[in-house]
Image (cartoon, rainbow, N blue to C red; front, top):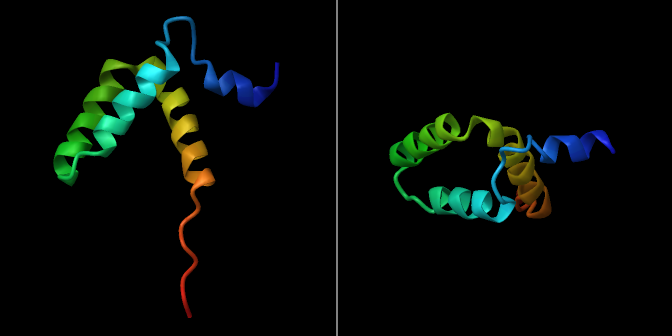
Length: 72
């Protein structure tokens, strides 16, 4: 098993990745930054064993959608 694969599987108590993704997408859709931050903190406190998976997954999404190059 590769090291990167281990990061994706935080343990046997981890829920279905699709459930995690839908919860994180719902949080990301919150417009108010302070409310969004509170929800992220609460989610991390509630699901600490899923935080490594969530970070790895979200970084993967960010790498798939690179930011627009700056115009100079």
